[in-house]
Length: 258
Length: 306
Image 1 (cartoon, rainbow over the protein chains, first blue to last red):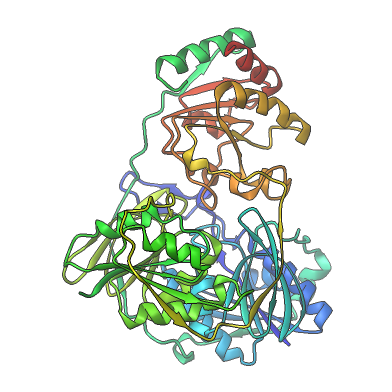
Image 2: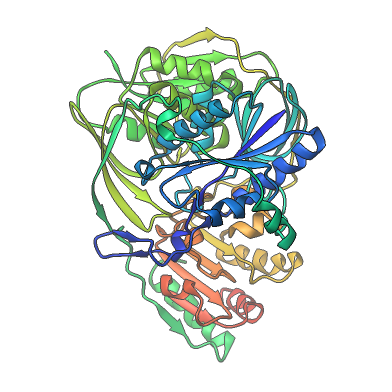
């Protein structure tokens, strides 16, 4: 059994700065494995260990995603090897394009039984790459997955649904997007980092992958800073909580919020 | 007439906003059609919602909507649209992803406005947790993930439901367990209290409950309170991947004001923040800020309302 974990090497918009014209400056943001992807790796690792499966990481993006630091950070979390699609033409790639490239990588690896992803990327937070990826592969997708057990061909998947949980059985290959709290990833130790340095890294050539062209062409013609409501930023004196509360209630009544 | 917009629907017929967006695309005239993969009653609600056409992919008992993703994609591709839309529920996202892959469409998830003309679609799209907006021109089909809105009211005349059968993916529901958490529609609430990790213990939610009663507010939370701490249902967390709300009043209690949370409340009319840290980011995004211990301030506000 082969399990692929698709992860992203990217930065947190919390660390980016936005210019007056809406341009986003990432230069001070430190890239890392996207916040929820370690959850996906951990969940997949548990399944791989129980099922005796190979665990392969896949990432795609512009220059940097395949740096030794980035590969080590992913491998130290328990992947057996990684397949990297590092190509500057993927800078600013949309969700559909990234999904198509990851699908190409999954075909390149061959005989993959399951793809596991995180809940959403920390930068784009679209939650769409896993579902488009499933469409590309002709596989079913299930999102908000909290647990997986079993073997290829008979996977038992628990997922969150609005108001509860559901247990599904999946009889073929599938893409599973984990929920953000599916499990608590362990922090890699020095031993894991040292071992990571010796694991195989396959830099696959984007041009050599089987990736059908998109029929949609996207062009960004401008950026802007979102118009935000002006806030009053009024800090009330809370030395006396009761007085502060009375002042707040009065102010809220005046603006019609109560 | 050709189809301008397909709306894909899984198990929740809350598509009021999608119909509004689909009806106001502008450009050449075209139908607004819907394809439903969930239970038959969902298709019936959709058929009465004012769309021009409804296709229902009936699946065997015990198949979740996701099992019909490929069938949905085929329905959409048979009458290729300019735009395909869905709400943000997990199963809706799966259907939209399948349709997008089949159409080889662009995918956008932060559309603020969408306009069609003869040869291109222009979308104002919020990106990176809404810190910026991009104007994007797309030639070719576009898949849009949007807030679904509310369940549309019946429009009087229902369109007939076209039923198709298909071979679903091998997915079977073995069991469904509903949680004890009461479900909530935060979008319908006029006032909302958001609870963050400033609250020390689950029992202390009682304090918030009392305030919510006095303010007539729904209770919501930041992501870690629902995921991780598990103090509330997941439908109560606000933020870039949770609920986005525009109430009259949002009262942030013990919330630091991280970007991912605050993008969910930028539409609020008035924001009040209570936090013990005077440097918390939430204060720069609030109308009224109270620096102090929430355990003193929350009961004080509750009493002031009586």
